[in-house]
Amino acid sequence: MAHRGLAMSEEEVFADFLGRVDLSGAVVAEIGGAFPTELIEQRGVARWYSVDPNREAARSGVREVIAVPAEEMPLPDSSADAVFSCNAFQFLDIGRTLLQAARVLKPGGLLYSHFGPIWSAVDGHQLEYVSYQGRDLAFWRDTLLPPWAHLAYDREELRELLRSGMPEDLADLLVWHVHDSTTINRSFFEDYLDAAVRSGLQWCEVSASEHLDYEIATPELDSALLREVAPNQLAADLTRERGRPTSVGIRDVLMVLRKPAA
Image 1 (cartoon, rainbow, N blue to C red):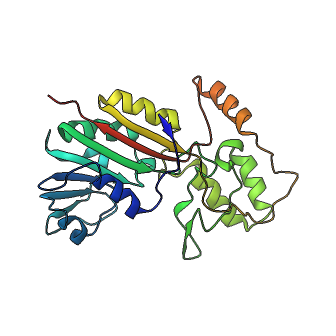
Image 2: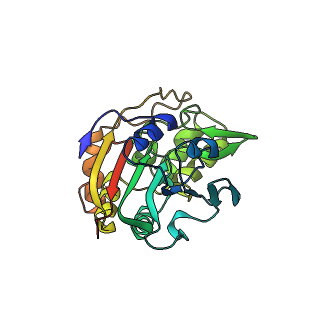
């Protein structure tokens, strides 16, 4: 496993994918998102399936949107030359998704996924797909939650802290997102590694980064309720609670796996 600065933009991720897979005449299953049809047609793709339950089923040229969860991917066995995903795996049941990817890939086919922030990160709550007063919130713009908020505070501790610096309804919404929302999968880095091993796919590359590319500047909160979180101690506490080694800090992940050749 390598640790390095990972590409952040969709364009960079797609360019890295193109450097690893010959798309001419290929069948690709995209998990989450839907790259523009004209972009993939330029690469001579035979068929591009975008599997995403949050989009409307549609077909345009070589691209077809299949509006179902990735965990229920309705493609035939050994039908795809590659599986591609950008910024989606943190929202999925990773174990079931990788098993589906292994099933639909042809022997020798490649899975390429870049995703994050994940639950082990300082901002792993990934405040997203939440609206307040008619505006969609985004974790990199609306830095309402303090570092490690999702890991270092229980429900009521977080509620009390947030209510000290913002309206109660907003504080309660954030607590719901952290503790109850089903949008994020709450998987630690080690959980992704275990799922990769269980999938039966071979590892080509797994790279990780702790880099945070924005400033977390929270509203003024009651300093008596704020905790000075030491990542090493937090990791030790989580290791004890989970009964298995658990690290914190890893934020973005590149996972490249291949189905063994027949």
